[in-house]
Image (cartoon, rainbow, N blue to C red; front, top):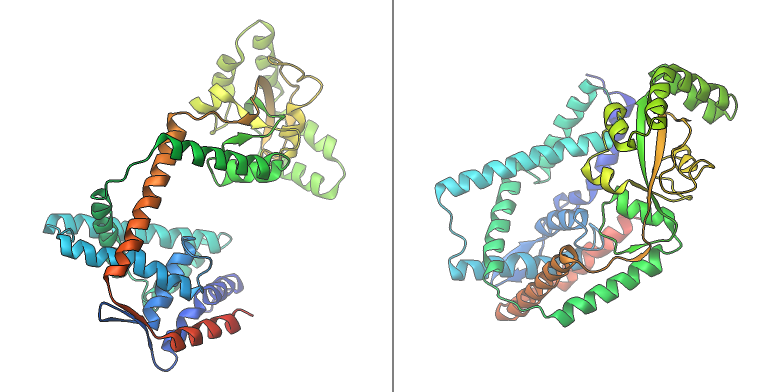
Length: 394
């Protein structure tokens, strides 16, 4: 079957991303180091580095020197120590459950990769791409069996980590909190774009809020797809935008009139909103706090941000005029002003810092255990691999 250009492009991108694994297949597969007498070959280091890099555990998927040290401290030392402590044993039922979990995760990752790289492919092209990807992963050693082995190791490591009792002081928690709050303030104070990227897209835990945010609720009325497409085309062309916007609003005029009639009669905005809004994101947390909107916001769309700071939205309790966008009609409500500055430490933040410090101290213990095992390096082979990787990425 002849592949489409889009499918070929996805496979080419995949080959470029995973191409360094071919290094191990060219000629020999030298031993890069030995751990307690066990040889670890180049192919294994390359495979591990790809996984570590994707998980952002090392600086890149070709930082093989970092991958070797990470592998020793976080893989080989825990495996050896767990075996000594008898923590690597599972019942048949436990193993079956571990393998099933790993297989499910493997398939989910396969699906996510296909959706990410082949979002514009047809269903049949996606299925072809998925099977090609599965075959390629199997060829490179990224198999379900490898995923199951890794999942089993993670269970063993978790058992061992639980045996490491570490103490976390209030002073240590306070120090981490102060350091992180200052970092967040320095980075996000005057950078609304970055703040919204980290908090809304990446769902990162940021402990500082820039000035100027307000909480906004919305009633969203989806409009006809053709009208929304016409609006997007007008915005792109830079002409006819107002006419396209009015067409969207007119298409929802009866609902709009009913909404404002109820609000004018004194009904609570939330009650009216719950009866009309088609916004899937308006859950309990959003209802309580609103969407955090800044005059420079980009994450919600320019029409939404402009409407949230329009002439009608001057104080808490104000309601906007109907606003058109590529989604339909928005009616906004000024719910609150979002407090700016550092977020006070609460139990959630304390637990987060405690987990972080606990993990750091356990990693330090693992690193100290590495001295108990004999490790020798084939530095010439490591240098050659690093040089080849550097040349391949130029």
